[in-house]
Image (cartoon, rainbow, N blue to C red; front, side, top):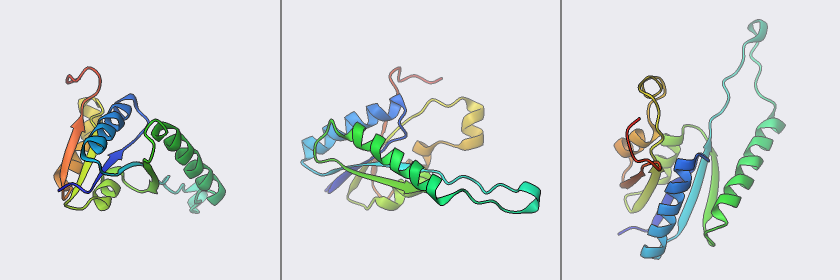
Length: 144
């Protein structure tokens, strides 16, 4: 039995489609919807062999901006919970899920080399999630 619907949002057009699908499922099932955006921490820079970590105020501003943007997207679906996390998008979505969740992600059309270099968040979520995963194709729904 599904107890909540979790949707990953990266602010792409494809993730807007995922949000729409997730909201429709949450409404049909009468379960809560949680929209999640995951920020990836910037890698430390090495100027002259000294590690320079990003300014905490800058990181907080990034998080605040993402939260506000997510709030705007979720505003079309009253009652939607929002969460902004730091880390790997696939790992964070999988960590949030339990066996009774439904996770919804968008399939973003990477080229073959991009997929090889970066992998696919959707594929990693499908592989590791403890629950059902709905993968929403982009508008064209075709391979690129």
